[in-house]
Amino acid sequence: MFFQSLEGFLLGIPAILIAITLHEYAHGKVAYILGDPTPQTQGRLTLNPLKHLDIMGSLMLILIGFGWAKPVQVNPFHFKIDREKGMMIVGLAGPAMNLLIAFCAGIGYNLFGSVTVPGVGVTFGLFFSYLIWFNVMLAVFNMIPLPPLDGSKVLMGVIPKRNLTIFHTLEAYGPIILLVLLLFGFIGPVIRPAILFIIDFIVRFTSFGVF
Image (cartoon, rainbow, N blue to C red; front, side):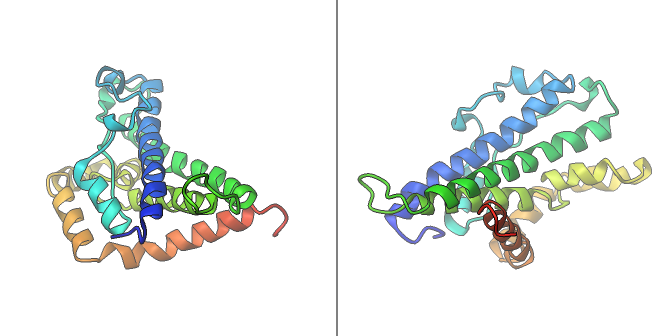
């Protein structure tokens, strides 16, 4: 299990819920701003984490520290702009939100990391550490260019339209491929260095005066 103690579990679960909820909310809100009412009609423009949890993705987060939320359904035909470009912007919204939260958590870590959590006996530093980890992890993990992850939507917005057929074909098998890669440990070693690099940068950058 990713969490090594009961205290870690109790502090890590709220961090997961914050990261997942705001990630998916950002997708839905940006899609809505671009003209698509689908996220609103499906009840995804909410900060209620229960609306955004995916059972398998949440379990993977708890067990191995990598996972995903329930994707927000978007209908690009409602967009006021080019469909592919709109999907690219919507795809970037979730990871961008996670990085913003991670930076805020970095400030919290540097300011309040040594403060003890009442009744738990550990410091707020552990909570902020989890908040940074899960948000950076979701940002990096979702930028993998494999459907249904956000990275595939971003890539669809920049490649020539004549090549989009490949991605539409891959969409049917993307979730299975992703689950297999996770279960056999292929993804962790690839993205972990990027995650740790970004975390180190955030903690240093938010420590006020390190650079």
